[in-house]
Structures are given as structure tokens and as C-alpha cells.
Image (tube, rainbow, N blue to C red; front, side):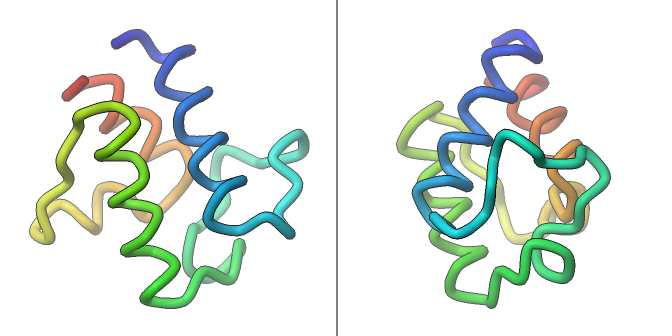
Length: 80
């Protein structure tokens, strides 16, 4: 999967899990849990939504790599 497709999938998943987040103005360096205010359950739903949409499974050991919007986009692009 290329980075553009991965970005679209991540933005769509964030919009689905956190509809109050404006995905049009997402900053790539935004931290998912702190800046976007996703709690633990929201974060897990985001990971599950990404997995269902892209087929990319993010194991718990890789959660630190996907802690930002950019990190998640890059992870999905690299593994999708």
C-alpha cells in the first residue's frame, strides 16, 4: 500500500472512531492518545478499524511506533 492510500485509510478510521476530530486539519505529528484525546478503548478501536479496512494487523509490541498520525500512516504503508 502506498503512503497516500495509507493516509486516507488512517484519516477515515480516525473519523470513524473519533467523529469530533476534524480529519481535514490533522497534523501528522499529532499524538493519537494525547493530542487527539483518544482513550485506551478508542485507540484499540482505531487499531481494529485499521486492521479491518486495510488488513494490517498492529501487534501490541508495535503500539509505540503508531503513537502519532504519521507513525500510523507509515506503519500501514509499510505493512499493507
